[in-house]
Length: 119
Image (cartoon, rainbow, N blue to C red; front, side, top):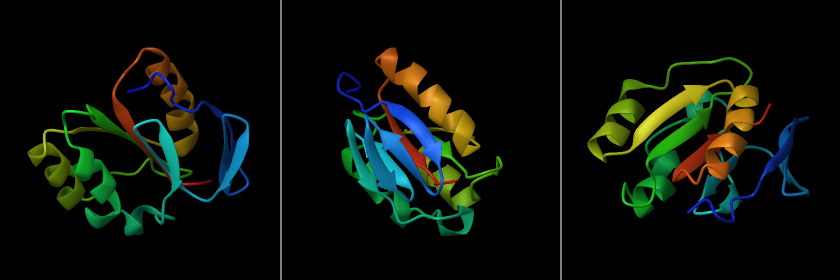
């Protein structure tokens, strides 16, 4: 899964630089593909916003690495329970920390989805 995962080279100014290319806004990295993600803050984090993750399921995603923005914040009970029921773990932290940890985890070959709110 993580063999071709794009590296996070930089973050800030409302976006990310992934494998050398600038991405404006929040991103969802799933199955080694980075896509724009409509979530701009924790109030927008819903089960619907994570539907692409549920679509591939626990067989392909061990856990979601959630970057919560400038500060660490607890996701809603609905999101936590929805992921748990799907057999998908959740690790959440502020986006700068999540961006750094993402590169380490993908280098280890971990099967994860990264849901990163832009800072």
